[in-house]
Image (cartoon, rainbow, N blue to C red; front, side, top):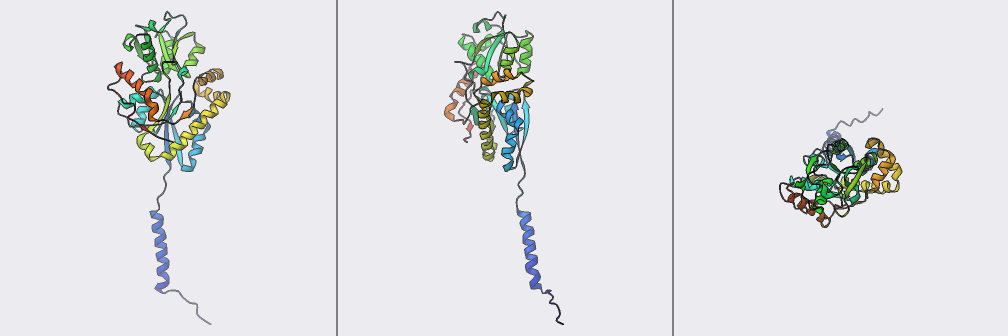
Length: 324
């Protein structure tokens, strides 16, 4: 009976061991893609971002890139961009045109990556219906609630200039939207400058008059920003966010009632009609940003510097712009 062949020669073992070692080295050497987290900062008026968050559409769109999303709410635009500048968030949802100017003055390294087309009727200066203030010039010496560095801050400056007044002719009360509403409602201030949805909410719930909105004073664009390094390192993520914002804007305008039903509980249970009216004052048209379109940003920067509200002059063009 023939004996079984024993493959004990070194020549048989060496290729096997070499193959196993090679496979082990390959496994060790292969990079493991770590899951990314996109941190998005937003405020109550960040309508499109709020829709993406609530409907879960952005997470689904980013899943193929193995990117998860965390959401961080801020009371207004300035603290949001401060958080972006120090790296606490990666993307800022829409902030009013004024806010990036203050961020530039603080030497923040930010990049514009999208804008919402002008919505001048989405902010206004209001007074109580029985107020003795009948026109803008009557604001001289009056106490006006305004959120520092918000778009409404620039509207106030522009409106005062139109009336022949300087910003120093009034008493500014720098308040968040919630505190501004409380101060206005309790007659602690003579006027309030605010934006949507706070504006329509006040107009429908309180006896008010509108002294001026943004028409012929402030176009009120809203900008989406990111850190300059993030824009360079994650262009694919920004592309997805841009497309999702664009789609959300189209969806909202095509489905105003459904959008209002989604937003109502997130906006302090505002009634559906109030939410619809507030949304009708904004275009929600997402567009790319170009340096050529930053001319009004320069006017805003110059106005704040002339009023002594910026520590130094700002070149609005000296900023990075991401192109989709």
